[in-house]
Image (cartoon, rainbow, N blue to C red):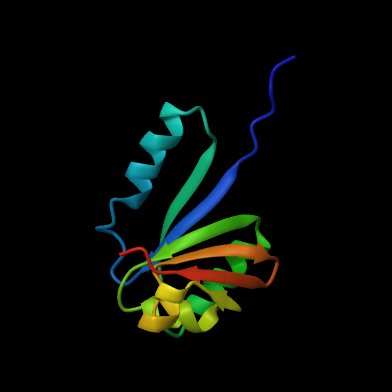
Length: 108
């Protein structure tokens, strides 16, 4: 019996986001390990980011990365955060802990 591969939904949000290499990098990584990943680049402004992030979560998304100018907005959106994100008051990575709660981290 073949294993069922669950689709992993991820995104990178930014403005501009078209130059982000994240979707291509993650696609290659996923391919190497036989993972089904849908990693999208989504153009977002500080005004549209919260709603777009909520839509990602509502559609089964597991997390996202953010680029400038959204890093402080990402940190503010999270219910909890790492010490690094808290000290910086910014985050570049959000993980969905539940349908409506995010965990923020700063890895750059």
